[in-house]
Structures are given as C-alpha cells and as structure tokens.
Length: 266
Length: 374
Image (cartoon, rainbow over all chains, first blue to last red; front, side, top):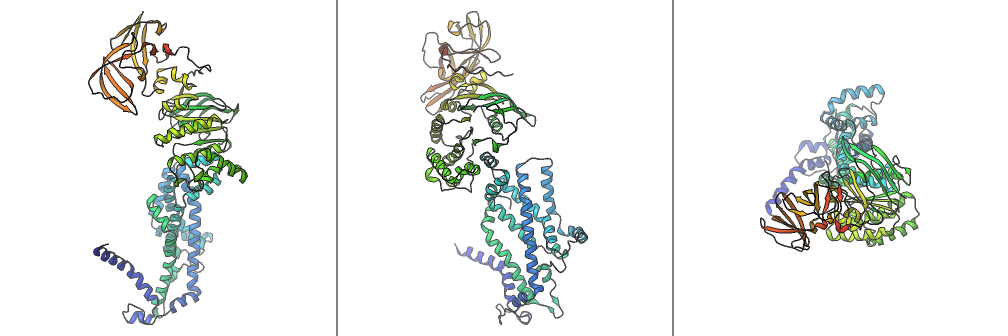
C-alpha cells in the first residue's frame, strides 16, 4: 500500500470514528469535566454513569423493554415473511404482482403517517403500552422489507430442488424446514439483521405507543433533562450501551451480509 | 409394471404443450423421447411424473389410474438437465434422502448407498458436499439418488447435456449398461438423434407436442412414417427433393430424370418427395444407375471427423455427410451421386409410402407400433 492510500484511509477512519470516540470518552467523564474543559481523555476516569444506569430500574428497564419488542418483531417478521416470500417466489396467483408492489409501497410512507391510527387503534383494543404493540407496529415496515429480501434469495433457488424433494417423498413442511430453510440461511440472517436494526433504532412509534410499562431506551434518553439541566455523562453512557447490541448483531451476521450483497436484494 | 398415457393433453395460456398423447411404456423398457427444443419432452415428463396435471386424459400405471395421485406417492425418480442436489447435505445424505423419508433402517441405507455409489464411481466423495464436486460427479450424485429408490419409473430429462463430450459418452454408456439389469421403466429425453441411436431401446419422436412415431430405435430410424420423423431422426436432416413420376420416368426438380425401376416399387404417376440421407450421398459413382447431380458448393462444415458439404443448384439444395475432413472452396462445381436404392418416397402430404429398397425385409420382429395422429 502506498503512502497516499494510507493517509486517505486514516483520514476516513478518523472522521468516521470521531463522534463515536467522543461519545465513549464523555461516558467516562463527570458532568463538570464535560462542561468545563476541552479534554481528549478523561481526567478523572469514572464508571459512575454506567453504575447509575445499571442500578436504576427506570434506566435498565428501557433496555429490557427495547430488547423484548425488537426480538418479538424479528420473530414475527420471519414467521410471516418466510411463507409469504416463498409464495411470491414460487406461485403465480391472482394479483401477485400488484400485491408485491403494494407491500413495497408500505415502506415509502413515513412512520409518522401511521402514528395516529396506531395510537387510536391500540388504545381502543387495550394494546397501548405493551411490547407486542410496538413489535406489531414495526412489522408494518419490517415485513415488506423482509419479504422483498427473502423473495430475491428464494427465486435464486431452482424450483427443481423443490420438485426433487417431492419426488423423493418429502411433504411440503418437511421439505421447507429440512431442505429449503438451510439453503437460504444467509438470507434469513440478513433479514433478521435488517428487522432488528430497524426496530432497534426506530423511536417515533416506540415512544408514542408506550408510556410506562414498555417504554424503550430511546424514549428514556430523550427525557433526561432534569432539574439540574442535562446529565451529559449519563446520556453518553446510555448512548454507548445503545450502540453495543447493533455492533454485536453486525458482528454475527457480517459474513451473511457480505453474501447477501453479492447474491440478493440487500 | 407398465405405464400408459391415454389422450393426454396439456394447454398453458392457450398454447398447446402436449397434444393428445397416447403411448404405452412396457415394463423394464428403456425409452428415448427424441424431439427438438420446445417439442414438449419436458412437459410430457412432468405430466408422467405428476409434477403437472394434464388438462385431459389419464395416466395409468399397471392399469390403475394415477392421474390425480400426488408426486410423493408415485414411487418415481427424476434426473434433471441441471445438476440438482441438496447443497446443504453431504453426498451420502443426498443419495440416502429417498430412503430416509421412507424410513428405511440405517444399516440398510448404508449398504444401499455404498452399492449405488460404487456403481456410479462416486464412493470416495460420499462425505463431501455436492458443490465441492465436478459437474459430472454432481450429476452422478443426482443419478445415484434416482437409482437408489428402485422405483417403478425413472425419468431422465436431458441429463448429459451440461457435461463435456467425453464425460457424456462415458456416462451414456454406463447408463445403458445399468439399465440392462434394472426392472424399471426408464424414459430418457434427448435432442440428439445420435444419442437416441447410441442408447437404443424404444424411441418415441415428439414434434410440436405430438407423438409422431414410436417403436424400436432401428425401426423408427429406418422406417420413418413421415418427412417430419425422418428430419427429426437424422443429423444433419434428411434431404428432400421434389419429383414427378410419370409412368416409368421420374423427373426431379433439378430437371434431371432417371428411369423408373422395380427398386422404387409400385408407385403411381404424380408428384412425390424423395428423401435421401446425407451419408448416402457419394462423391464417386458406386452403381451404374446412381443419379448424378452437378451442383455448386455452398459451404463445408467440419463436425468431428466428418464433413458436412452443403451444395445448391438447379432449384435443389443438398447436404452430404462425408467421412474424413475435406476442404472445399465455395462456389466450386461438384458432382455427387445419389443411389436409387436408398431413396425414400414420401407423398406430397409428407407421409412415407415407400422405404428404400435396400431396407426391405429388415424390419425387426417386434414390429413398430404405428401411431396415428390427426
């Protein structure tokens, strides 16, 4: 590698990493230090901010709530999108193409459009402030994307494999679980990742559809302005903890994502 | 166990894929479905397998109607043109898959898999994944899976097309040997006349969704019932020359005439089509009564160790198949000879009315089942 390349890449990484670096540094500083001086490294290194979060249930419950509805969302998305994508990739039926397109158009509307109907509907059927409410609302966006990604992968599997399995004597459910799903496990990984990330970072719906019981971490973070002003250090620590699950998921599905980019519709 | 198709038709979006097919496959027979691309070979096989439903007609196995029975319960196997294996299962599991579903005991599975794998020379690859094998080995795996079932019917849909020439010859030979001892009906689809001849057995010619002729391979080859059959079952296609028979004199469209012979049999005066196979045309006179034609070379194609010489002139064009590699320049005049005793005579509707004289009396004893069509 020549010098210019090294300088270029270093600059690139520097600019990308700078905000994250700043966030992590802030989370180990006290509020006084954050507000008083410009320091590139914590002068009084402290874990207080993290200890605060892990001991205060109004903080850590936010993470638990978020995890619950995100995981619910991923499960529901996969359970509905897998059969739907299989149908779209294998069968021609009345209105299949318009239906597929309509699924995609759901992604084009901003979430804010659906706030009012969801809020009113969930309030009237008693789903307001539950984890499943947020998970279902997020499905409106994650299912179409999942169907679209999975359909692309499934169409890449020759139908002759399905037929060979039937000829061998497989029933449909057995073929689907034992032969077909393992063949598209990259696609399932990619789909799970996108559903997870969408649901994890989505704030507007999650905040509006919850009040106490299922309040997500994102909503808690926006309500940290207390009597003595903004608690900068605590907020930074919460931010760091919010990034971690995303990093973990990316780490686990990185190979699948690379394959997904090469093969399908990511 | 025998397989009978009765008035089978299939129409998709107004397009006829299979038009009223009637045929019986005898128990333990090796059958070749010969037809060009889009002739309906795959469609017919899918109907036989039960992957598609016919719009009309019945499929009978040993006299029992199986038309509505799902493919899982048909006890058949199929090998596709593409190499179809389960990519996430090892070669062993791929081959064992039909037995596993049927609930066969492990010891029995091990025994049968190693038997079949040995037969197809893939015993050293059993622990690998299919995609780690070469194309030929992948197709052998697919064939092993089809054979291990010992079903009543095996369908081969152009299984060797995607393999290289050498491998194709080898596998074709092995396949033929394998089926000499099997008690299964094998149906093999092919686009190549030479492959059908090499495989032998019973040949069925398929053209535009219709079965136009069926019978033992040599009969179908030697006694095509129509120009269509003759063209389909000869590579390069048979040459057709128009001619008029007037009493004892025959005048072909080039203006050349030759005298009528007892070798041509009894044909009444009128217009006819005469057929001559490319490999019967010679560059030197063999018999006194050979028809000599002066033509001009169009192009000479080399195919393997043979030369296909395309010639034209006097309102006829011919292809001659010559042994050996020859160089011809375009637009050079050539004289070729057509032996009269090797001429087929077709009427103007294309139906064969007279086989060449040299073949008379050579029909095999199991006479060809003539297939009528509308």
